[in-house]
Image (cartoon, rainbow, N blue to C red; front, side, top):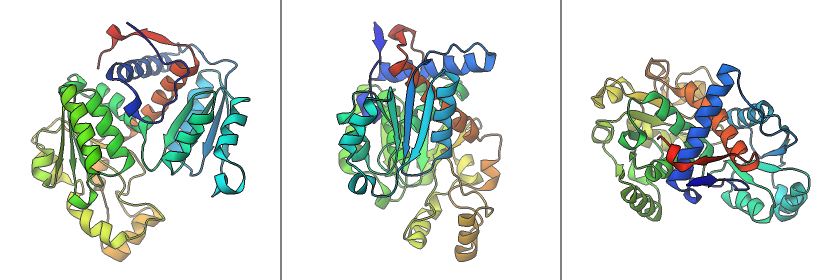
Length: 341
């Protein structure tokens, strides 16, 4: 069965089948290999891509630019002013205008409703670079990284996510793992568990594909047998309620004892970046001074250890973005039987 993603938008992974996710991962792996061997074939010559951003993201925006350039496309990056939709023009009009000029639009911002409105009115593919609700590109990059680093197929892999289970990264990866039949666990205080409707939906999807989705509060039980321990930033520069979040999440920081509790010497550590693993950043210094912590979600020893694959993830975001570009506006198709997760 041939699978074509030509003309498709990428807003969440919920819109994609396990087969479609599989072929995107396979394409990303092939494009990565071609780039490293110097045999990459530009499939996007003559294409133009607009990158719209409400918030800077080195990984997503820079990765998107390099992915486009590697494939022969031209890009323009535009930072949208705060309140753009209400002050400078409607998203509906923006979508219709950009569709006349560009072959695709990528949006990085806060509201999921914004990227969905762009996609509803654009006549070209719209990609969710990230929102507060969903981060499909990061999830695909994570799955590609696991595919590379694991000594077994993805449906046999177990992942434990520690921290804020409501985050866009946690929920997007949980959904992707469910689609592929993996064992995915969110380990966090109950206050940070996703909504019950999300839990029910992902649990059902995981069961349908032979996987498992579990929400736990106990770290030891949550990480036991994990092939990957994943965490993300607890807070950002403008996060409110620092003291309370740090108090609640402190028991879920990834330290050497957590990695040992997996009882898996091959367990890898993952993080979507930016990471606060020491006091060298402004945020890290502030937390160290105010709360007496020299690290937050992960210790420096684990972040810098041989078990860490965080920079493989960072690189792979570019390869998965490239796969999305090629599959949706480059006319690439594949046979689903070639999928090897």
